[in-house]
Structure formats: structure tokens, C-alpha cells
Image (cartoon, rainbow over all chains, first blue to last red; front, side, top):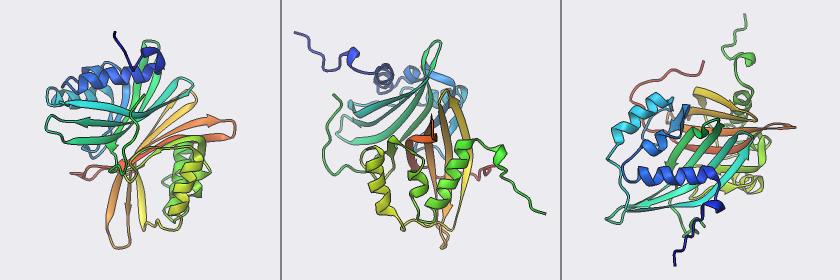
Length: 140
Length: 140
């Protein structure tokens, strides 16, 4: 019997998009994100001193990382989607680990906007989470 | 002659709200933010292991910080506002320094939503910026 703890119908469309893009990202392929970013996307991560503005600049940054990212496993923790008209604000913590056992947890805010072509990421913010004192529930 | 490099008419309403709330925050008063947060606000910062959900929980967190924050000076760097229907996504870097000269720079994403009572913060994300290799232009 095939079971699926993550039936697509149970989660918001932007969370499904994010999950699919993360799956590719963790295999070294940034195109999953680039394909769903808005032309006017803004981007923060903890390795850059300032925001990246626009898909062209973000593409250059991501392409330099192509093939360098790999995770043995990962999970999305406590995802939440708040719709505001044509925007959907997705927030979650992201926990990933390597083959050698090291792990890291991130805070992520993704603002999606509805375009005629579908949901597109308008703003990405990645940062490190503080150390967790207690284990948390994983995503449903 | 009185000059003003920051005429209110030149900046988006949510940036003016943020600036006013930061002014109070840097004097130890979190009420400036609490007064403009949505009931359903979500909140990330680098000191917490997970997101804070809702104004009640955020109020408890902020009230514990009341009177503890102080900055000798601060500036908003490279602010950007992207409107998406009833949402306005404000991003900026925030640079603050103490009387002893130590300084810190943050990345901030603030998602505002338009309520009948005015703009309210629906999602806040604070994190540390990476060290800056070169000086950047300050906000206009």
C-alpha cells in the first residue's frame, strides 16, 4: 500500500511550490526557485551584506551555487501561509542535515504574489534560527 | 532655514510607520510596534528558535524587553517597498550603534497589510546581515 503523509490537497499551493523547489535546491539545482521567482524579486540571506534585487542578479548568485548544495535530508517545520489578497506569505523553519550528521535550522519568509502565470516569489528572507532548546513537531 | 532630507511625502506610508516605530524601539519602547501589529502577526528574530504567532504572544515577548533596548544612533539602509494589492512588502537593512561605538547591521522584511484601521504588520523577519565589505549608501 502506498501511503502519503503529505497529500497535495492538504497543503497550500505556495507550500507545495516551495517544497518542490527545495527538493531541487537540496540536490544542487537552483532552477526550481528561479523558475518561480518574480522579475522584481528581493532576496536576503545571512551570507550577503545587502539585499539582492531582481531576477537577473539573483540568477547570477544562484548559478554560482549550482551543484554545490547537497543535503542528505531535510524537513519543513511549522509552515504557515497567510493570504493577503493577491499575496501569500509563507513562513516556516527549515531543518536540513548532511551525510556526516551535521544539521542546521533556518527561519524562512517567502512572500508570493499571484501573477497571471501563477504564484511567483516576490521576497525571500533566509536566516539562521537560534538553537532549539526542545524538539519541535515536524510538518504534518 | 530648516532643511529636511526625509520629507514625509517622499517615502511610502509603511516606511514612515516603520521609522516611527523604530525610533520608539531604540528608546526602549516596544509599543510603537505593538500598536501597528496585526492580531495574526508572525515574527522571526535570531534569538528565538521558532516563529512567534499572534499579537498576544508577541506582546509578551516585547514587554519582557521593555526598557532594555537603547541605541545611540541608527539608520535605515536601502529601503524598498513593493505593493501587492492590499499588502506592502518593506525590506531594508538596519544599522544601529551604541554609545561605546559597537554597531550591528540587520536584514529586515516587514509585510504590512491594509486593514480598515490602517496598515498593520502581518509578518516580521529580523536577522543579522553578513559583514559588509564596502560602505553602502544610506537611505535617501
